[in-house]
Amino acid sequence: MEDKFDCIIVGGGIAGLSAAMMLARGNARFLLIERGEFCGAKNVSGGVLWGSDLARLVPNYWEEGLGFERFVNHRRLTFMDEQSAFSVDFKSRHFEETPYAGVTVLRSVFDAWLADRVQEAIDASDQAEESFMATDILVEEILQEDGRVVGIRAGEESFHSDCVIIAEGVNNLLTRQIGLEKDYVPDTYVAVGVKEVLKLDERKLMDRFQLSGRSGLTNEFVGMCSDGVEGGGFLYTNRDSISLGLVLGMRDLRDKKKTPYDVLNGFKEHPAIADMIAGAETVEYSAHVVSTGDIRGIPSEIYTDGAMIVGEAAHLLLNAGKAIQGMDYAMRSGILAAETALAAKEKQDYSSSMLSNYRTALENSYVLKDMRSFQDAVHLLHQEQMFGAIPNLICDFGRQFFTIDSEPTPKASSMMRASIKRHASYWELVKLGLKGARAI
Ligand SMILES: Cc1cc2nc3c(=O)[nH]c(=O)nc-3n(C[C@H](O)[C@H](O)[C@H](O)COP(=O)(O)OP(=O)(O)OC[C@H]3O[C@@H](n4cnc5c(N)ncnc54)[C@H](O)[C@@H]3O)c2cc1C
Image (tube, rainbow, N blue to C red; front, side):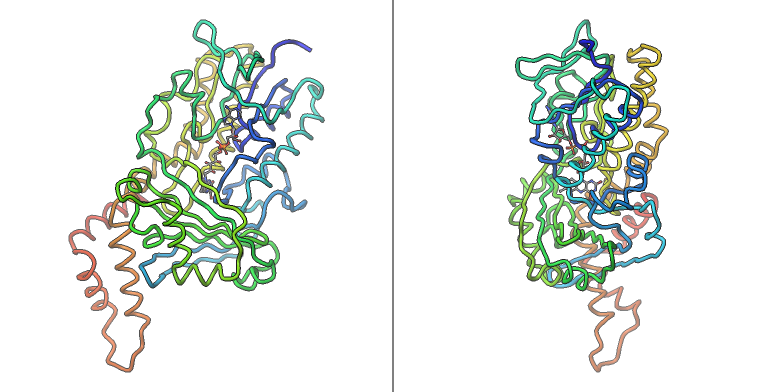
């Protein structure tokens, strides 16, 4: 065996495993290092993997039916005040076609499954004896010589490669080490994600959420779910469990002196949620930092001589109200970085000018295009009215509209006027409406 790999991947999350799959298929000689006991052991996610890239990595994955929990054919967005919930609900047969538009996943299961598929690809490659995935090892240092990345150090051991793909996730310490990320990342670029997995008998779950076969529901929440803190909530159905959680602004939590755990408990007690999780038992609780999707969080550059940064290590994530897209961005960026590494191998040129093709490919992909297009929506979501006045106003209107009380019924327009008067001003609404129309 030669003493140098074509590529070393740091991190066996979605970005790292996606890169590994492409490298194995391209017959590259690579080493993937994951600090967890197994791939997925350290990973948290609310759990919808959007888009169709999974089918690119594992064609027809739905036939085997392993790895994912449910495909999403039912989506709901709910506005909450203290006592009420007003939802926009959409269910469609179109979402039942393969490749699915979204699947719910539990990361400890999904990442381990994907790692097994990568191992199969390694076994089938020309480098079956010379490519490896190693777990339970922490990479402590990115090795550099004359300003270019040449490998990694883990404990006493050093490994060298032509190129390193850094897929270490949002706490991007190694990315900072090589100077691509500032030591100080403003707290508005990151949020706190908290999540519980609640176990519920599969039959009960299917009846409760009107699911059939492997179909599933995603529900996003805005308003009282976050107890006045900037952020929102989510509920996703798995096979026999529910993922329930919140993403909360770090600065706002601190300023309002609230803890994520207390806010989550309050969310669970909301009448709309309490009914959905009744009888379910919490089997997992986790908390993790997550990018807010602010494009200013992306490191100064996502490549350098001999290295590329992928996934959330590069703050690639979009949360513009409709969904959290971090896993699909991790997948696509891992794929694009691996394709760039394979092209660099072909030319034996791992210079930053060659690796800049990764940046170009990402700019031309939906990842950076959408992050750029929807920045206004990302910022709009963080405005105080979005988690206070607006959901309160919508629920107030809903309460009037759906009340039938043997009294003369006002027209919907006058109900709306009354709600606006109670919760906002016309001027405020016009400004928000204009911003909203431009943002989405
Ligand atoms: C509560 C919550 C809900 C979310 N919901 C969704 C959702 O519904 N849909 C969605 O698309 N996204 C969601 N996200 C975001 C999504 O989870 C991330 O964007 C995605 O996991 C990023 O993938 P990644 O591979 O870049 O990083 P990660 O998944 O974080 O993987 C990084 C890997 O690198 C390993 N690692 C780190 N440092 C080292 C080191 N020094 N040496 C060796 N290994 C190392 C870690 O152990 C880990 O396995 C959510 C996040 C949170 C917190």
